Image 1 (cartoon, rainbow, N blue to C red):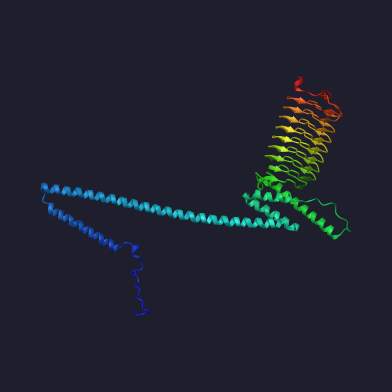
Image 2 (image 1 turned 30 degrees about the vertical axis):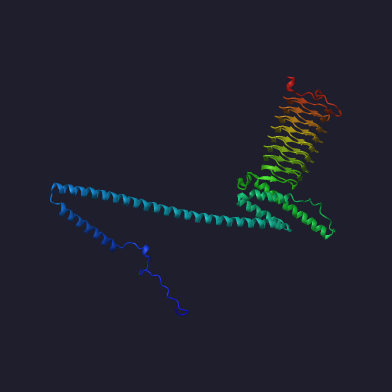
Length: 431
């Protein structure tokens, strides 16, 4: 064989028609020919049977009956085969339909996943951009970041708790209220610093307002209410707080500072609530507040007046070592759980008129440096006033005690306390 010569490869044969033979369907002409052949075969078979067994004898009749029986069996078997083939075709068609439906579901799921991923990427991009704005140097940019987070959470409920956590973390960042405005002759750096502090104050007040708007079920007919939100503002500096009629879940305010007046009237605290170590610099209102879980005011300081009038404590309430520098009012307050005021100090008047204590009330080591009123108070459980310091004007008029009452080592204006000195007051044990 000569070098470089290669035998010519045999080319695969191609069908003469434009379609694949395996996919060809029977034409009308082919069907007509097959039907004619079957008809001729049937006529020939009938003629042959008549020729052979058509003489009418008993033997011929028996043979014809046998042929008929065999034919019937053959036709029955053919019908059964046809039914099996039809069932197989039906099963194949149903399987094909199921496969098509499965393919459609897979495509729809893929499209849904793609849309979901795109939405998640969009939300992540908006979130990251808003957080970057919140960390900007200029106050207007930080305000824009707050409003962007607000809008993002309103449109995406699953992101609300995360965004609340971000805003809360911002409020927990170190900050001090600016002093009075500097003199005109002060250095430019002082004026710029004061201006920056004032702008940051506005940003923080806006962040607080966003929280209150979304925690109030009645705000804008509840369309902007975010339910079941946990709030952690531990160590935050809060300015002129107004959480009226809001609902908070597992609220944490430990070691926070409430500057200015604080309005928490009608608020509902769900879950455990903590105000331990808190400082209230202005007047504070907890009137008609509801504490559904345990609440702690341990070592809290109330520098101005505080009112818990008509508020309710359903869990355990503790005010250990709390300091009340001005008037403290618990008028018509309901303590469903036990209450502890151990080592609390009431520098000004303490008013517990019409208060109801359904469980034990522990007030060991409490100091009432001014007037204290327990008029018409009701103690359903034990009431321990051990080592309590009472002032000269203390009244238990109309108070009722259903449990164990103790005034061990208590004093009244520096002398040993004698319960009879507080007469008239009504004790159940005296009846």
